[in-house]
Image 1 (cartoon, rainbow, N blue to C red):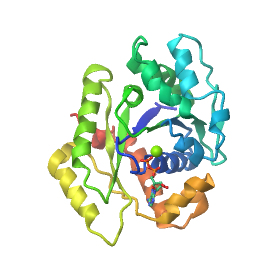
Image 2: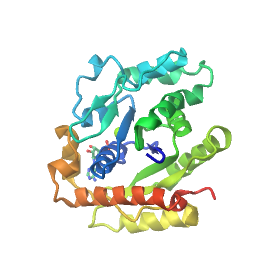
Image 3: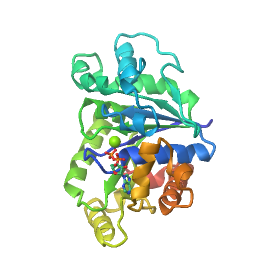
Length: 273
Ligand code: ADP
Ligand code: MG
């Protein structure tokens, strides 16, 4: 294991495929032989449910209970609370209790780095740690950025995302300046592309116009398909449910791009050079 990579999947807009991307990139990486942990950092617990764990209120160890322990300077075991998915990835789940965390960490010491203290100790066990962020730029998302090497930003092709992106990029820049100097942009993932419209092209142009060469946009775009939406109810990946489908192919290609960006010194992914 050369070095683990921690990637936050973030966009403060909901419904842009953060969770679907966390599942299918995570399992995509596992299919390439990588050891992968995915962390559910959205109190809605869609990631936990998408991986087939539905009784979330009965989970005793979750991201919030672990963050509480960290705040109290108690030891957290490396396998504590970790669930295993049949397709070869590990999950640190959450439930609605995580929603109280935004408030309860306000008075904690070094409140921005609570999640980082947990994730840093998990790095030696994994090649990739993916954090499925909630749709806001609050304390939990800041904690995810503080803990991450890079941020992957899914944007929905049917919506002009530039205004929201500015705020997101600003937040990441501030985290870089004050808390995590090595964080960089993994890239923008254009998702839910409806081939019958020209939105995707327009959005790429718009993003390029506004952020120039500095922000990488993945070559791979994820097509819109109801098949992708079916996977979360089934608790399995698109590779398992519809292996021949174009969305499965797209997520496999994205996985290849993410792996390749590590090998070329992450140049393509660094928006801050
Ligand atoms: P987020 O985590 O950003 O809120 P989700 O991954 O939950 O987004 O996706 C939002 C909704 O869109 C979900 O119902 C999901 O199943 C569906 N979805 C995700 N990816 C696609 C896609 N490529 N095509 C069609 N629907 C999708
Ligand atoms: Mg989500």
